[in-house]
Structures are given as structure tokens and as C-alpha cells.
Amino acid sequence: MIDPGVWPSTVSAQILPLLFGYLLGSIPFGLILTRMAGLGDVRAIGSGNIGATNVLRTGRRDIAAATLVLDAGKGTAAVLIAAAIWSPVPAAIAGAGAFLGHIAPIWLGFRGGKGVATFLGVLIGLHWPTALVFAALWLGLALLLRYSSLAALVASAAAPVALLLFDRPLFAAIVGAMAVILWLRHHGNIRRLLAGRESRIGGRA
Image (cartoon, rainbow, N blue to C red; front, side, top):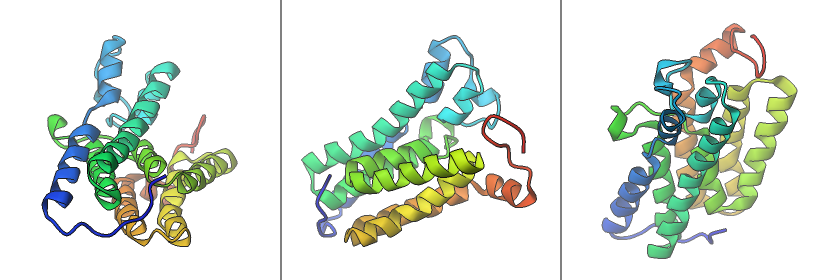
């Protein structure tokens, strides 16, 4: 868990962590792993994104699980490495960069995943109690309502609130901005939820 700091005063302490995090986050593990497993291009099936949920549609739970771990791991790694090089707030900026890199990787024409796993990975690196709040909300809602997207939306909205309650206002601001982007990435899911057409976990709408 990283202690809160102050906003960096130099441009380099803002831009360099962001670029570092973006490059790390833009590694498309879902695409790499499915190709290595001989499953073809994961972007050609389901939602067309490179995240673990879409990888699961290949029928390979092991590959989906590995994608989930690696996508979360790059968020955590970006935060921890940046914290060692710079300071706490640049570490959070690097985490945001990793999140942006995952959802809009330059190598794939800025078409990536929806960022839920990387969002969680950033929280693990920044403040593990908030990561536990996120995970508990996601798991509880997913089991209760069986809507993965709704669970992610609620958990991501709760994360910056939790950070404020834990007295991490700068982290809360950065994670709050990430949550807004995550909601925007889920615009299609939100429309389907409102229309009652969103697919449930393990079944139909």
C-alpha cells in the first residue's frame, strides 16, 4: 500500500509516469495468449475486445484466467515500479496510464479491453483495502445479480468513494477519472441493462 503524497510539481514527474504506464498497460495479453494457444484472433469473436471476459468466449477458462491475472498485474506493476522511481502520486498517474493503455493500445488502433481487471490491478498497487472493497462488491453483485458489467460499474464507482473515506483524496481524484472512463467504455452494456437485454453470467438476459 502506497502512502498518499502531493501532486508532482514538474511536468516530467507527470508525463513520464503516464507514458511509462501507458506502454506497460498497452501490452495486449488477451490477444497474445489466445494466439499462442492457437485460438486465432480474439477480436474476431464476441465483443471484439481483448479482455478476459471475451477471451472466456473461446471456451478456454485457463487462458481467460491467465489474461485476467496479467491484465491486473500490469496495472499493479505500473504503480509499484513508478512508486520506486518517482513518488506516490506519479505512481497513481502511471496506474492511470496503464489503464488507458489497456483500453486504447496504440498497437491495436486504440481498440482494447474495457479495463476492469487493470482498474483492479491499479487499486491493488495503490491501496489494497480499496482493492478489497472493489473485489467484494464486484463478486457479491456478480453472484447475486449475475451481471458482470453491472458489478463492475458499481464497484468502480465505489472505489473513489472508498479512497476518500480512507483519506486518499489525490488517489480518489485519479481513480475517479478512471471510473468515468470505465463507465464510458461500458456504454453499450448500460444501454442493454436499461433495456433488460444484457447477458447474465452463465446464461441469457
